[in-house]
Image (cartoon, rainbow, N blue to C red; front, side):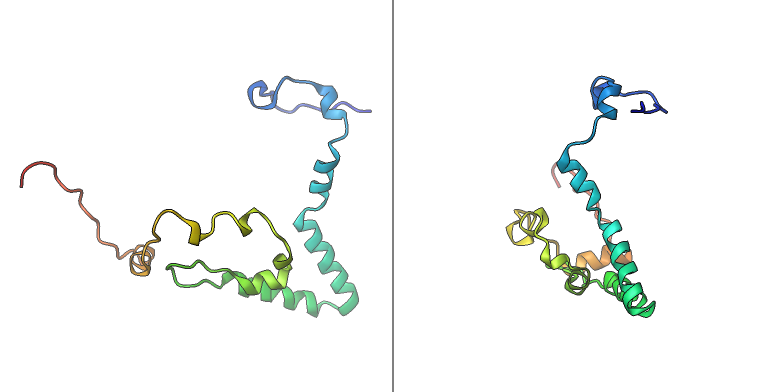
Amino acid sequence: MELPFQSRPHDSLRQGLCNLREDVLPQHPVQTIQESGRPEAAIAGKAQMLRQLYGVALPAKMQIEQQILGRFARLPGALPSSKLGLESLTGALDEFGFESYLGQPSESETAPPDMHSQMETRLGLAAVTKPLGRGII
């Protein structure tokens, strides 16, 4: 068992009291599972498997399609772009996370801005509004 080398000072307020024994002990099983299931490692492993099975062309084609579908954007307005094509290509349609049911625009308390004002601000054409003066006109 080897003690870790501390390269910077320990922040006791944010990380708790300094205890090298806790740094050496194995992590919680759930944390280990979450770190082993990183999407980058899964994507690289899947690309390597496809490269070995079907050759270099298929992973290259899929990567180009991901770049094209990732750049697709809807005009600003009431509905944000769902990027359904990208989700279906990457397999994200099968996942159900917090973003699937929290933060939906239909449940928002504020009214969405109209498309024209969003395009004006995007293109830098928005007129600067002056604050109203207080008092008698």
